[in-house]
Length: 153
Image (cartoon, rainbow, N blue to C red; front, side, top):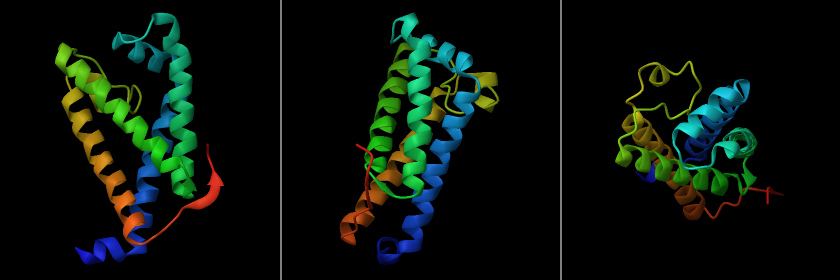
């Protein structure tokens, strides 16, 4: 266990993989913003006329902060953590409401988009991503590490 918190390689691998997930997700969403805006509308949280602008904002944020996490820019892990928490809240609400919709996480070619009923799987996946973010925060704390001084905010 001590190895996990002392290994900079483990920190780098988890940080880069989590960043790549967000970069990939952002690129996929940007490739079909109309589809993603329909997914956002299906959650019935926002007024319909805000679905498209939010699809752009979310996609761009995932791409920008994913790249930031890969290159270890200050603020990127915090932004990704906040997005993950927001995704958890939205997915939990949709599960509570009994929705049978695609989460929109990885675009229309994601297998869950074809079968729906997978919001619980998406929720579990996001919990695993949160655990990775917690690890990154823990590693930084235990090793007195500060990311790049380039500030995102």
